[in-house]
Image (cartoon, rainbow, N blue to C red; front, side, top):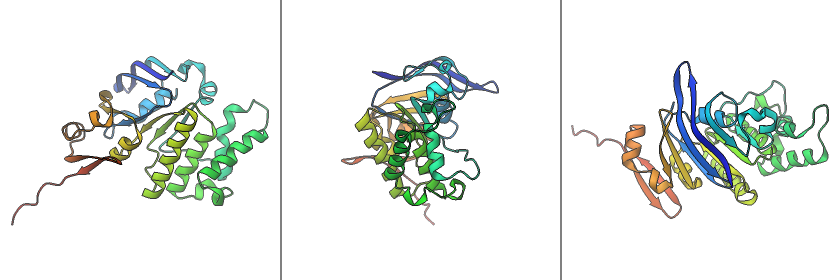
Length: 260
């Protein structure tokens, strides 16, 4: 079943096409890693899919168009932003609980099931010791896990991740990505993740979509997309690509030092 479909999607800002004629189809249960240098349009594309920025063309996600309304979309689509806005004084548990808001009728309160979902997320992300702390007092890595918890509490069909591990140390990076992948495999969760780490993107993403100046320049398996020549063209970087049993590794190469 198709969960995400984009046809000729365009997003403009101040007359500049930030996302330029993007076509994309993602099937249920896929993990698609979205790559590209800074300014390539990765975040803007995710925001267009979530209905947060106006776009032209055709966008359908979890069976809905942006015209379905924010609340309806939030019941099936969750976005973990790169720069979350955290209300002053809200605790970790309260911030995660906000993920249940689309499922709670107006003027109603949360149910035992809502509270059980929040408790489960806190447990799976190892946040028990932080649950009562103000979210504004957390480190960047801690807050990133809490914001992921809020997204998971929505119990979405489609999870949009914008640099989900940028503030995490390598251990927590692996734990978070493993958890998301486990949820995807267990519950037919569909994941689109904008990622800077090419190796992690290739190890977790069954498919890579590479953007440059708002356009899709490559779409396929890690072996098809990650070539030294293409990385050089798009990123202006010198790299070596290693295909290992545990997944691809992307190693930066320096120029040989000049002889004195």
